[in-house]
Length: 456
Ligand code: PLP
Image 1 (cartoon, rainbow, N blue to C red):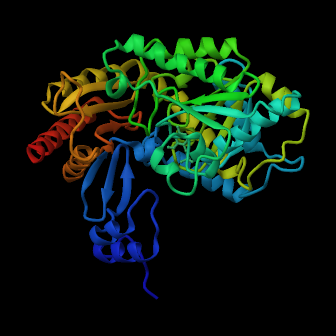
Image 2: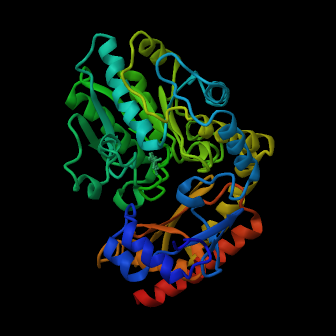
Image 3: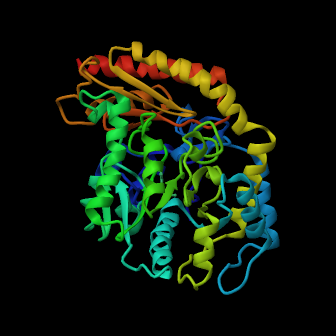
């Protein structure tokens, strides 16, 4: 039997991978042609591939390795828990200590009265929970017709049927007959691409007021909830104008609809505070969490639920749950992750020191001829690639080509940056140091130069 290991030649690993492994969000034929990059190890913010390249991971995996790679404490927490109680479920009146301890910790960390958690295995699952929970909540209150959830175009809420329907990605909707009924999408607060002649502040207000218009159009008695990411992540790190969230909050307070903040990316330090809801002064009834909760070391997600919604839900048996809801190993890993993020001051330092330094350096990229705006929210950021800064023009050729060329250049320069259309995004581990930020900017600049030369 061939032992498949890190010691195998890269080409052989790639061939086996292409033959048997179907990758998410990947064209299989392209993969078979080029071969996937094989990552073998990681430490801090640095990945090592099977060719021995050291790569700066400016995406923290998929926006999730907030604590950085290679923390043995998390591995040890997982091993301890696996030996003691590797699995038990939380259905049918049972529980276990890791689920209890993590719920208690989350209630203490979360803002306002988000004192309850419904566990899931991922962000997608948690948003499916939210969809069913808000409809069940209103049915419990004698309003079963309040079931429409308003979301936004270009939002990302996950890949399951429910969560991809909540999301507003047209490419995802085109596959598999989405969205499911009773989900309504309004426009996003993406000033650079869609703001026209308005100032960002005017545009933020106008886009927020689309929520009010939608509520009027659909009927207040039909709308259950509004869901949004504090900062759209996968949509391209769209930082909303300052006027946007206060107006959304006003509208949610005025009409009887629940507000769901999807903090799968924004949670656990990403925007410079523990939660994006704190950064943008949002008071959600439900908050979706995942990713940074365990820094990606173990799969776990959940819905943080406010007192009022939990009280109503507790009056019924919610016929919903996952085999891995509150998985003891994932809970133990998450608890250790939160302990380190808190005790080592990683979240505090990210907000107070790293984020301002990153912003200062990131803003310099606007001096590059290819870069229009540069946006930063804590430790997530984006730049818009444009052929003409003053008119905020998009590239005439296929949208996304410039971004793709730039991403390929980054790859060649040992930097992981992602492209969303013609926007380049970053979301590095919160532990990134100032010298590492300098290296990241230097490699990004070099990649932009190379992309610029190819686009001329
Ligand atoms: N919600 C947001 C805001 C996300 O960014 C993501 C993933 O990127 C999800 C939900 C889905 O999470 P998961 O991939 O864990 O299912």
